[in-house]
Length: 180
Length: 201
Image 1 (cartoon, each protein chain N blue to C red):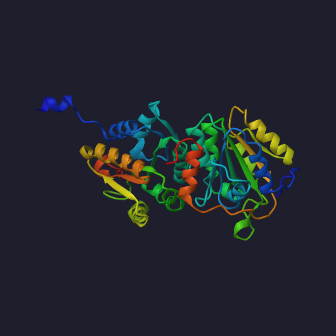
Image 2 (cartoon, chains in turn purple, brown; image 1 turned 90 degrees about the horizontal axis):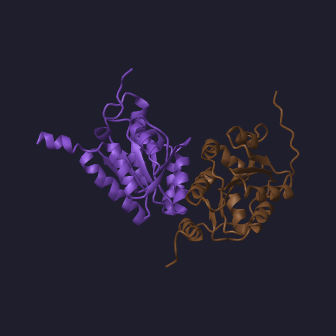
Image 3 (cartoon, rainbow over the protein chains, first blue to last red; image 1 turned 135 degrees about the vertical axis):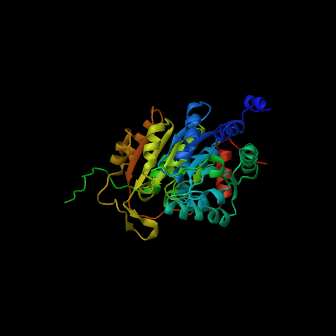
């Protein structure tokens, strides 16, 4: 049993995200980085299937994938919680009223061991903003559910022309911990 | 002590320049109009299926145009943006310079004011040179248009450029000429048809 488990060692969460993006033909990946996303960003850069690049601001990245969608290319934006907090205007005035299937991955700072008071307060603004716009969002906490949640959410976003936020919980990623 | 750089650029008109641009389009080029007067004048210059009009999200005309340019590298994409809007998103000039799409032409309509909110001056009005900022951001092919003929020449030149082009134009304080129909879903759907991404029912 132990041997079998070793042989089929589960994919890491970044691998699951990368493979699921690829299977859904999501190719354009602008991001504003986060420590938790480092491994995912590195493997996306290393894979020529994806066009992966940093932007100066999260709303800039949202603009880029919105334009790409209108031009026929699917994308997703990577950011952390504090980056999401800069997006209320672009979500309310571009993405939601234009019915653009924006796919966002937000690594969750500010909870389950946060050490920065500002981060914990910013985190509390995230779900109320999503809920106020009636945006679909899921908090990913378990590796065994991740592929299902990401795959179904991308497909639903595209077919219903509605944005989705996938919040990557410290329960999934390990989060960022205080180490001087 | 501050000094305003001397400019030998003529003060032109947004609607006139937009009309000149649209009149030169022959190959279903995409045109992304920024918030407010910039897209109002694009609308007034005559609606085309390849036009997209930004009703909110101030500052995102260039990023949106970049996305279209990356999605359709064989299509020329023009972006029209106001100076106040660009000031909200200067970082995107670096992003565009790094990705360097050769099919993207950006136009900055610079009147130094937030015309639509009551003509208040922008913080950059008397001090900053947006074309110089673009050049320093890595967009080496950035130029002020001296007059209307020079604008048309720069537009034509950009069609065969091997990198992104940015054209600054000084404009007067006139408001937009038309009013875009404010229907975001129709605007997006029409544009996607214009881009060949969608077919009508």
